[in-house]
Image (cartoon, rainbow, N blue to C red; front, side, top):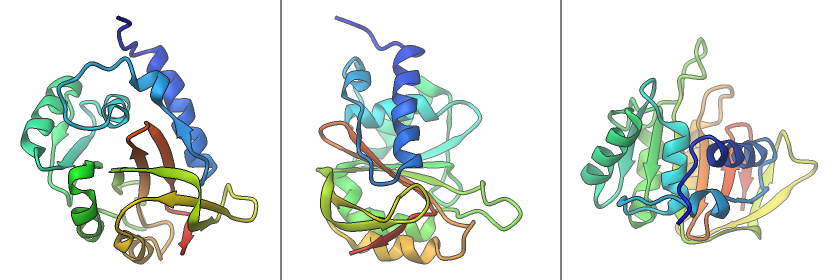
Length: 195
């Protein structure tokens, strides 16, 4: 069995996530990088990969899941990152079992930065059953030539919530969405969403 390589797997995965963040609507696949992860965390392997890639002792995180305490404890042990409240966490991870119910609520509570420090905002990493580059959600903004259409399964209440908190650029949040096939779709705060 091949083990997860913190250097090469994270480097390759980081490039893919960065490409998706720079070009909203582009769906990348983390299957190659995430498939080597062996973890008892009940989340998509790509979510665990994102935890390993993003978290360290300098940042805080929160997990929204039916098994939040167990997952948070394991992740904190693995990454040395500190667990914090939704309102103060740098990264908020939402597993699929809680995403439809909680994403809209989480959007109302996360930090969006301030005009002096817009970078002091949260990044939301959420699991959906399916995401793809073909769908009825239209993305426009920087990094997109005219518009890109995407499909994101599940409840769509979060779109209006995100629109409200991202209306005063540079304030707002960035979103990273993952699906059960280890696909990743990034929607930065500068991207507009229309249905």
